[in-house]
Each structure stands twice: as structure tokens, then as C-alpha cells.
Image (cartoon, rainbow, N blue to C red; front, side, top):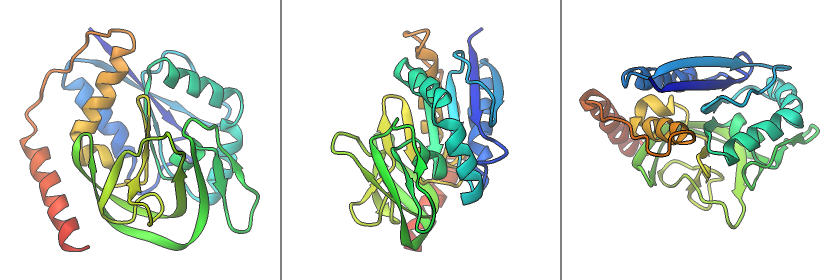
Length: 241
């Protein structure tokens, strides 16, 4: 039996807007395929083991983000980068996404260090972006909900996760949303993203297991209910833009 170990980064600090649903989706869609799935919670001061297949890193409030940034920067961040560079997969959302870039610069506080997994910079903006988001991506249309004031700019060689059709995205100006580096995704899509977009869930799982079994392929699941929910969410997003 194939195994799937999910590493949930800072679950008590970085867990807002229902984003724990991403962990539930990874676990459940793995279990439906007969994978032995385990969720490992990784908090401040905890080491990062080398056997984690897929990571989730959510968003949090500013105060929590400060403590997390300083814990992540250094040995834990280096271990996370090594895991990604050797084939692990990752989804990061909002604050987690920002701390995986070069850092986050708030208005009236010290800059928070990032680990530079993504070649991206984030600064605090004067406007808060709140609302539904639809993007065009390599997986087709994806839908989520943004709630952020950070403005993220990608480096010239970093590919965005998608291009915005509805919403504001990374910075409200260049139509990009999120970032992709190897099997790591960063984005501002709450919602939670993975239950609304199961094709991304399956991609993360498949890429993670291919790290140790290159020939692995996920068996398809009946996704009628998921497809209907996704279509309804996209229709509502387009209607309210």
C-alpha cells in the first residue's frame, strides 16, 4: 500500500478562513484511493522530518505571522526548500505564501524574513482585496476567495499559478495569481481551495508520491458533486464581479 504523509505547517498559528479544509481534502482524496494517509502537525520549535510527501501552509494574523517567520527562517526553512527541490509538493495560502518568498514588508513594523523558495516579494498595500477569484491555470478554471492587502510581485522567471479572470490576484495590477516552483504552489485563494478544485488536490498527491515512485498514477474518482459545486462557485463569482 502506498502511503501519503501530509505535513501541516503551524496549524495553531496559521489557520484562518477555513483553510484546514485543504488538509482534509488531501487526506480524504488520498484515502479514497486506498492510500494510507497520515497528517503530521508541525509547530514552532518542531523539526521538519524528511519523510513528508506534501505540505500545507496556511494564512494567519500579523502577530502569529511574526513568530512563524522567525521559526521558519533558518534550519527549518532550509529543510523545507530541500524537500521541495527533491520532489515533495506543497500548497501555501496567503501568509504562508508570503513567507515562502523573500519576505513581507508591513507598513509600520519590521520586515518579516522569507525563505526565498519563491522568487517573490510582498509589501503591505493600502487597499484590501476581498472577494471571489477565478483564474485560468494549467488545471483549467480555478475558483477561490481572496482576503488580503499584501501586494506580491513575482520575479521574472517565476511562473504564476494562473491569470485572473475575476478578482485582483497577486497585486491587483498585472493579473497574475499565485506562483509555481517545481511541485510547490503559492496563492491567495482561500475557500478552501482544494475542496473546490479537486484537480489541484489530485495533482499535489500524485506529484508527491512520484517523488519515490515515478510511475505512480492516481486512479480517477467520480467527481460529479465536486464538479457541480465548482461550477456553481464559478458562476456566482462571475455574476458578482
